[in-house]
Amino acid sequence: MTIQQVKSVLEKSAPVMLQENYDNAGLLTGNPAWECTGVIVALDAIEAVIQEAIDNNCNLVVAHHPIIFSELKKLTGKNYVERTIIRAIKNDIAIYAIHTNLDNVLWGVNGKIADKFGLVNRQVLQPKNNLLKKLVVFVPVTHAEKLKEAIFSAGAGQIGNYSECSFNSAGQGTFKGGQGTNPFIGKPGERFTADEIKVEVIYFDWLEQPILKAMQLAHPYEEIAYDIIAIENQHQQLGSGLIGDLPKPISETECLGLIKQQFNLSGIRHTAFTGKMVQRIAVCGGAGSFLIGSAIAAGAQIYITADIKYHEFFDADGNLLIADIGHYESEQFTIDLLIDILKENFTTFAVLKTGIKTNPVQYFL
Ligand SMILES: [Zn+2]
Image (cartoon, rainbow, N blue to C red):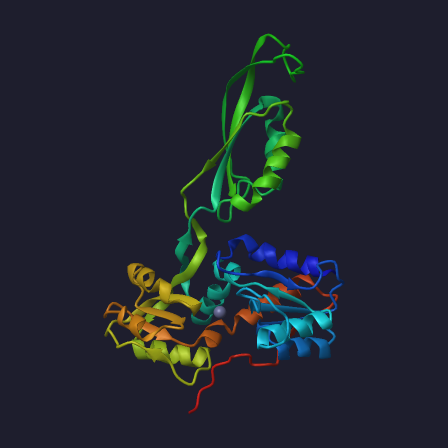
């Protein structure tokens, strides 16, 4: 098994194209062609984790946070990022980061948090725009099935848990071949009317090239008539944050107690109690202040996240309870999620959970 195969499995769960534009997810060091000798999974690929990989004969570190995040212009070892990269490169350790792309899938970082509360009716809190496009292609009736087969295989026609979705309408297409043409039916210089099917499918933007290629290979015409249309639909399972319901309402103090216990916390920073019962819960692992408004709009009674600043706590404004449970703490189960995906797909090498608590935040109690 190569590093590339591990990368492909992870990217099937959380396509790298789903990362935010400020992010740097993907393979950060190493060569995709290397044979994978073992994987260490961590939230942060810091120097100690690279050493742990070396000690355990694992040449791949899969981390949630990209160790190279901002511009890296020198590699002299003057800070922890440079030292980590130097140690990784010197020891042929690949570092792979799966960051906001894993935040942006409903079954990712936030799905794992939601599991801890048994949340039902789960939805993305802020669905993503501009991920979907539509292909409209005109194909002779005789080749419609073959063409659909090809574009479905390339990933077109996926809506939620449904695949091979298309709309098909019959009609007539006309064409007249000019000089030097060799029309599939009819003769050059004469207008021909062909029985055609108009096939409409939606697809993820990043699958456009393979889908168009599949369409071209399966279509019999020299010149293919097709339209690519940008659509405004939001994708309901892709985006930031998650909202869901507890099976039954509990009090605010019970809810904080439950969080404390499930996440093994020594304390929680939170806003004033609103006095409401809690059933609808919004979550966002890691820095989530940008979703306070969405959590309120979605009718959440509590918003569980991290990295809330002083003035942002005021934004709760009596509408809901904000619980800041700590960045590392909120994402701690992401490691298990990644381990589960890897173990399910690979049995030929070890997949280990880091033994290092990489949280840079300490609490003096
Ligand atoms: Zn994070």
